[in-house]
Image 1: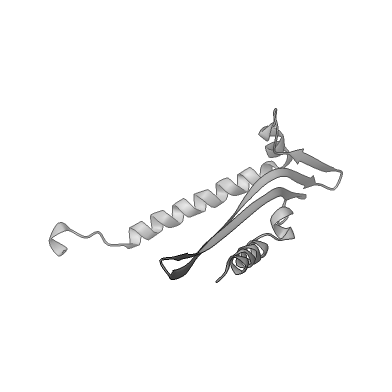
Image 2: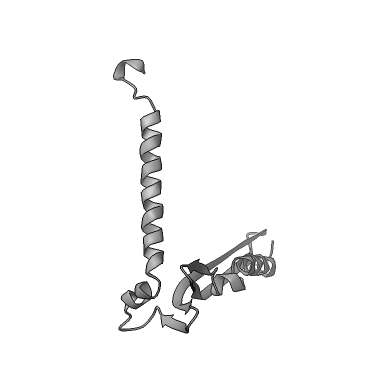
Amino acid sequence: MGVEELMKEVVEQLETLITTKTIVGEPITVAGKTVVPISKVSFGFGSGGGEGRRDEKSGFGGAGAGGAKIEPVAFLVISEDEVKLLSATGKGIDIGKIVEAVPEVMDKLKSMRGKQEKETEKTKEKEPEKSVDED
């Protein structure tokens, strides 16, 4: 595979990862408010290769790499009365404002965490304990 093919493959793989849904996230609706996360996507790629004829031996070496970074930059908060765009970047960001905009999200996350902990406890209760002699 040549350098051109390597670059093409890397770019194609990055294109499959980065879609409009990556930038404008899935809306979350709780108690009459909808929060839409807005993200910034950065990506880069590089490739290289070489061909040589040392002592009448020819060969080829090549490599390609790519990377992506997804960073939340804002939250669009939509309610019946208003639409707010809350920044998640820069100096003086008050995460409290974001939490205040949709306090129910925090309650929902806490509830989900509690359910996961209870399920873990139930699973542990069902598993019989092994004694050292059983192995």
